[in-house]
Length: 182
Image (tube, rainbow, N blue to C red; front, side, top):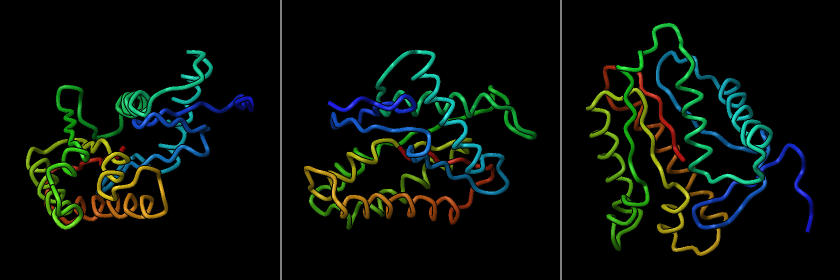
């Protein structure tokens, strides 16, 4: 067995697979519309801090994807930016991509994207501060019918994230909203 590098941690996926990650290989997707203090470098630094916390302070060699995402969300929400909502005003709404894929039935991708757009519209009408779509990997695996991650899976994953970005920018909503896809 090969020893895990000092700056790496195993990120356990929902399917049980564990992937070695460090701050340079963890891909975080946070999308906002309008002026937002959450630029790419800031999110990368925050994810590096979360990785350091689990690895160095907690002494852990592995974490689940959900644990990592929750910790990153807490870190990002902990920063007070000019004009940011107070804790009483903050609203995080969630949607389950896996459930949307299941609800798409036999038509898979044909109805999935329409359902996804409808879900985005419904959530945005509630004026959230952040929209979080969970279960991307399992959703992609279900839609492709794959048992193992493949180039087709990667392509569909990128299509879903791009579709969500486009929907967020196209849909009218009164308040700025961050989009997290995990």
